[in-house]
Amino acid sequence: MSEVCAVCGEKLSKYGNRQLKDGILCRNCVKLASPWLNDDDYLARDAEAIRKHLEYREKNKEVLKNFEQEREVDGKYSLYLDEDNRQFVISKRKDFRKDNADVLSYEELEELAIFEQKYMEEDGKVDILMDIRLHNPEIDNICFRVNEFPGMERDSEEYNQTLEQAFRYLNAFDGEEGIDFEQTEGE
Ligand SMILES: [Zn+2]
Image 1 (spheres, rainbow, N blue to C red):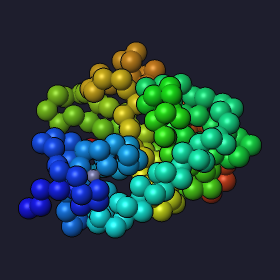
Image 2: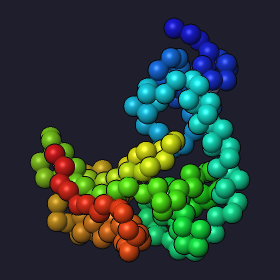
Image 3: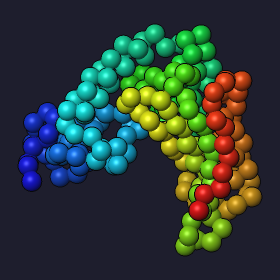
Image 4: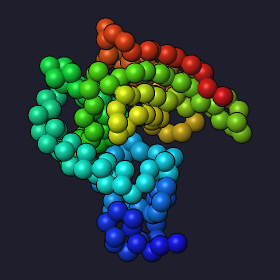
């Protein structure tokens, strides 16, 4: 196994690395990549694909400069909408520019789904997840937990508020054509 990052060539640190198809990506390169890439996304990509991804991330900084935050759906993850440019960003941080949050377009939206994930061991506990499928060459899926802390009692006050929150994300794109809206119960 190589001891250096397959993309930047720096020595690997002990933690925060990701396994790629053909090598290992260092923590610093991971920080530059989109936060929406998961372990499987990294495994499916080789060093060359990550180099291209990091170039895309550099360009995203420029695109963000023209992003006008006209509407906002506040939450653990906030959704910011630029309705004139038909673009949106989703970020965990208020300072989404500093975070270089990915700018996505309405046209790239394929499916918005709210689903409930059950906890097998803890009977009755659930999470509500927001799952967004995209036609985007770099990010094909955004999935995040809407509730602040994992595991809620079903039909509790927190559960109902979380579901309302999930619908606020969904409704932000209400009226858009060609998007599938779904609400499903997971296993
Ligand atoms: Zn690196």
